[in-house]
Image (cartoon, rainbow, N blue to C red; front, side):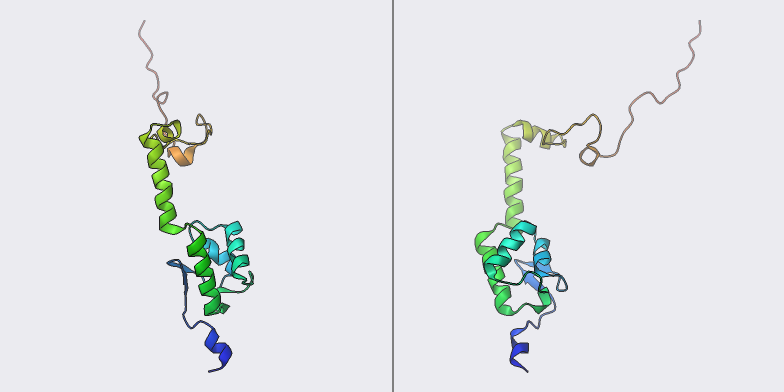
Length: 140
């Protein structure tokens, strides 16, 4: 086996922070598959790890993967821990009966959007109320 082949990964799927990231994508795109990492943070991680952003995940060496993993675990809150933080924040707002908490409880938009029209994603399928039955003519 050549020395270059020894430095390459032999595993089919790369795992970072407990998430399978796609092998055939470029590193800067593949990192965004991790909950809590978007394009900006992905580029910050890649710059800190000194990895070429356009290289494919399958072509990363073990050393590069471990550098990426170390930076992510030491500097960022991601995946399950981030979801726990977010749900804890929402629960706190509900418990203290803040306006935003009440909106969360009522399953309505939280950030000031209008609800007379639109807001269908949050409120669900449209339900027509009244005005559908024909009025019966009254006897005179």
